[in-house]
Image (cartoon, rainbow, N blue to C red; front, side, top):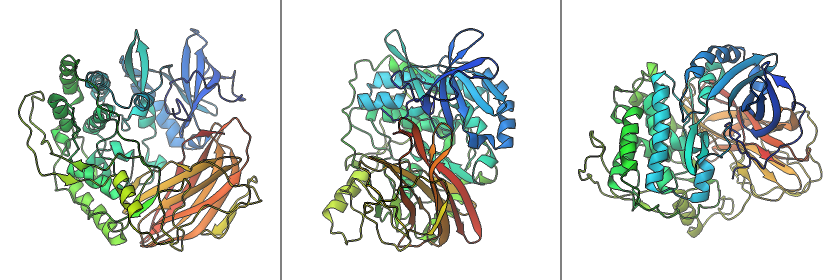
Length: 584
């Protein structure tokens, strides 16, 4: 189970009572009592609370102090109250209230205590097709209701689907609609940036298209595939390769997936948004299918994922999608209504910067080396027609496991990053890979900032034990035409060791600052360290800052926070990335 249960949702972990806090027992929003924290996230803290008027238990999500300094967010928060309160559905975590009182800004939601779908999938490995279809049908029903109100979720994934035991049968509760809408502000993101979870992003989302109902349907197709297969359809850890796989639309069909279910999956994963079914159509089709797959066994659990690693590897030239016009349930995309043109611009920038020949691989576990078999073309409705699929020749897939296996067999120069060590460091400004830091005697406990050029200083102290845990992200900044990969990391042992890395196209310069913060209060407990004048070259497209060591108070949750700036051709991208909270 994740280290931060309920971090992004109002679900409760009954075993995590959290540290004692100064906010416990405080009344917020005039009528809600904070009982204890039950989760931490990048946007805020989830509390178990009580409605003083009714005595009912509730979940209260308080946004972090850093978000409160956005005046437009507070205004949007209040404006969204009406429409979020309108969203009433059995499979949606109900938003009871939104409040802004003094320095508190939060959402009051129903309390769900059954964990999330990600945890369930980790325990089970795979889900029987009938169960997967039933759960996906509930999510589709929730999306259909939201889409009728003009609400797009934007971040559908197993982590945002809570589970409730209803007389021995799992029921889904979709959460975080409110956060997705409220945080969709220009002031909250880099101008012209696309933020999302790459494995669940629709092809048009990579190119800056406006989110639409079809965007959610695509993510639901990825979710359905993951439930029955145990992993997403596209598992490459190379960002350019992952973009190409989504654009080509050739998911691998595992043996044992029934034909009717596969046809629904491929319809949801259609590259063109207008070819995807609506969420309302899926409710009917999945409901019918669930009644006819009761005897189909679950697929075997996918192979053990490879050890997390950071590997530099060549990838094929990205394929530029053809120009296409979005119709049907695709919302207008404004200036990006021609994703093919934007794709050409992004791909051209990648080629000019050398990313097409020196890509980075992020540390998301992948599957075993496999080949992509036949490709099923998206059929026209009805979905459940028993027409034979049309196949094309097999194509090899570049998975994380195949890269790791090939790297292990091939000779490596001394400076290369291997996949056998638990602790890894990206290339520095000199283009040389770093090994683990030497034991040190100075621990970073002071709040003052220390500014350094590149990696000129490594703190001293006892070396931390354990494996580096990183939170890789993807930002496609269309102002700088740069796909950016922020990566805050931490390692636990006798001390907390933390660092930050940024992957960006060659030809730019940047700056990284990294600090350790209390995940509840947002208070800085170590750092920040600032690494200035970082140069991104073809030999070194990843620059890092740190590591630092700290010994803050134990029994609390912390998060690594990095702020970074990237400049190329006179254009600047500046953002903040927050790592996954962890307990020490």
